Image (cartoon, rainbow, N blue to C red; front, side):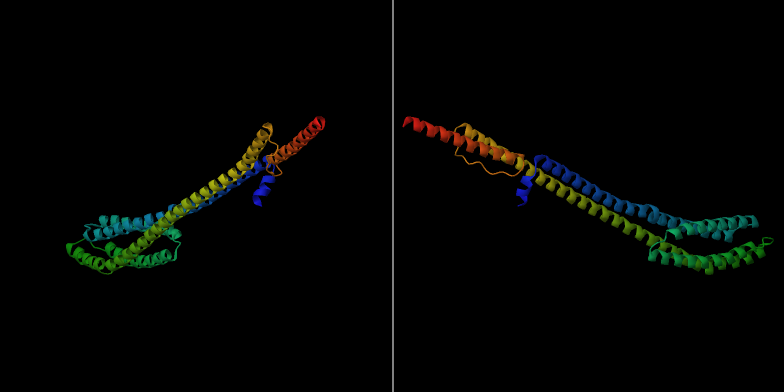
Length: 288
């Protein structure tokens, strides 16, 4: 029934319908490709704008806190007030840099695990900075006037450095390492999601492309057959009549131009058969 209805369409309508189908399939394929590209772009942007910077900044924080710790160690071996002042300034500068990085890193924390890990790090860093303040106060109070005073005050500084300060630093560094691991895990998970999105996009586009090709081929075959088959039937009927065979049946076509041609050939054959019959009847009458 569908083929019959399609055969009733005019050739121009069939060609226009074929072109329309190709355009629709092309638009559908383009829309699907754009959607998949948007999904891949979203995953890539998440990696570029959020996850990779968080991994990088967590690494920078670990570098800064270890430099700060080395500067604290230098306070124990300082030989004069000028060295102490210089080291304190370094520690203060590192602390300021860490605070700036903390603000940027906190803005990048999105997932619940990242937020929780950053909260633990911030808590331990605050405790470490409080102990560090006590350490700096002791260092600033070292009396370099005599060797005995230096030894006495330096011993208190060393005890603080190896005791409370070491524990606070270890706790802060550990939570910072955990934060870095969480950020790295999130980046790795996003990378895997991006790869999955790309693979799904490739499969979806390939399937859609294959479907478009199949539909286009089917539609092209239908159009070609709806034109070529009646044309071949018309040629065969015309040759049969040219050879004097007026009994050869002519297939009934559709309502398109080729169907009208077959109908005209059928009518012409009937008229020719009538003419031949009249001529034959007249000849027999004359002979009688």
